[in-house]
Image (cartoon, rainbow, N blue to C red; front, top):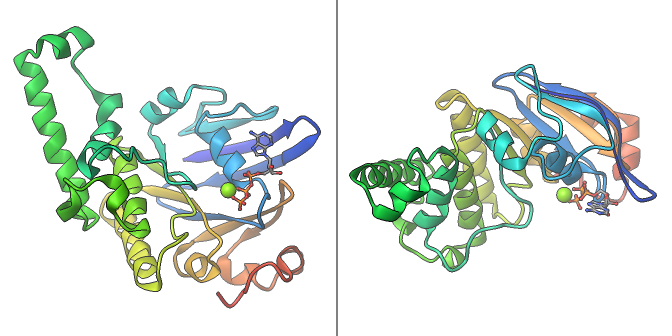
Length: 255
Ligand SMILES: Nc1ncnc2c1ncn2[C@@H]1O[C@H](COP(=O)(O)OP(=O)(O)OP(=O)(O)O)[C@@H](O)[C@H]1O
Ligand SMILES: [Mg+2]
């Protein structure tokens, strides 16, 4: 599904990503972990076209997508959420999700301006679809609420809803459990499983919560200072000496 091939990213003198390679298989739930500043978000930014790698390639479904614009990459079927929630605060929850449909708008600008019948048809279909996604994530009752007024955990769900509106095959989640309480984290784990079983999504996620990683990830890639120090099963990660060293005193491995 996704192949990252010998990717390096330098910011001036800082090597944020160093010769990183890995593959995510279809329907896999794949975790990207590592201490703060390890390069996880940078890797997401490279995959989604926000920044270009200094060297190396990214392939999606066998196609080279390196350096394509973020919009083109969304159209190919990759969507993401952000570590720092990026919702439009002045808009309702529903409107925030509707933005996700922008990429698939079939009518053109002039049609929209003159509000041809097709425009209304599209808008209605998108609203129905947006509601369906909100229902799926259990937040449809907040549809008309201002996005900013929701709890942190629910705002993260709205971000997921907006990403789902673009109908991705691969969903990238940057610290989805951050700021969630234990109940919300459990629900999130369920949601991720359901997205795979019921919606056939492949999921690549970044997370510091090791309990969450152990619970849902099929495989894990550990980065430290931009380098891969471990790739394998979550249970083996905790026994790996390099991983323990990288995390020593940094996090509670018990979760
Ligand atoms: N646009 C940028 N310009 C310069 N340096 C950057 C830029 N983006 C990231 N970096 C640097 O690259 C390194 C990796 O940062 P990144 O945000 O990818 O880490 P991370 O693993 O996501 O960390 P965290 O767990 O804290 O989110 C850091 O040293 C960071 O300061
Ligand atoms: Mg990050």
